Length: 183
Image (cartoon, rainbow, N blue to C red; front, side, top):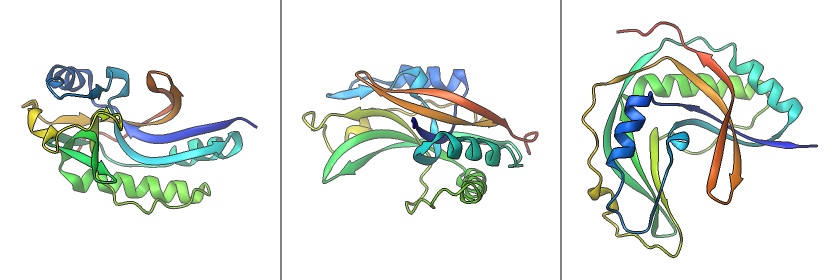
């Protein structure tokens, strides 16, 4: 039985992704994300079989949620075992995206997916670091967040992740439109 490694995410619009791509650079040892890899994870699901994947896709289709604006905020880093392993940029306001995240959690629970115990911190990963790279602790300081107007979130997507030699490749399995954006 083939297994599918799934997650639910938002794709920032092309203009936002372009601005982020232009902001990349100047951090030693960073493996920068490609345009195709830029997203805001709403929920990591992990490995499921085809039947569970179909249940998940159907359950997500029942979600009703108004679109909402998001703006980029400050950059930061994630550490694992005391060393920086990812560089990210945050988004705000958190309330609307958290409400969507909570609806996705409930839909996934109905499809039999165990809850995710981790705190939800909406962000866009810009770079990852190999264990050998050991970036400076203040790696995020080198990234200047593009000053863009807030962008409208109009849909979310179910992605499948394929791990390849160049890092992960993400394929959209389904796209779910949100209701018209609330001011």
